[in-house]
Length: 134
Image (cartoon, rainbow, N blue to C red; front, top):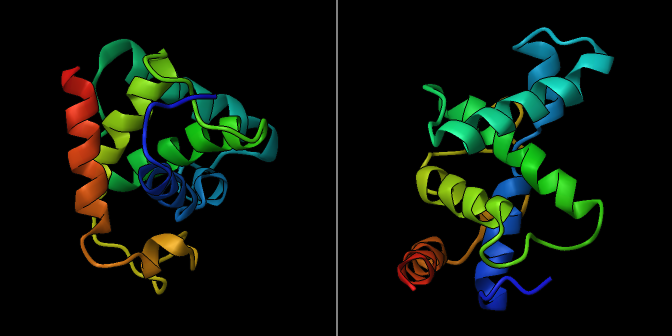
């Protein structure tokens, strides 16, 4: 799908979406049984999309962002530009890209996000802000 974004920004979006294990978080923090993980994450994603409100804990938002990315990773692409999921993806990124993460934290996996070039997260955020103004 065409996101209308540069490949570098797409990579930043994907790497932030994959840095946090939302499935493990749902099982351990929200005490979801295995069969409850997807419905719980989906309900939280719908809440954000319907209300435009994030959760108080950044980790709850990281888990929900993870779920959004996993839904599209399954099909091998990111949401199409201007779709509801595209806006949600940008919303999450702009609220989460400055959250400090370390591979020593629970639920954080070693990923490209932790090894990103200096300034690349800010460059992606600037591009997203510009895209939202159009």
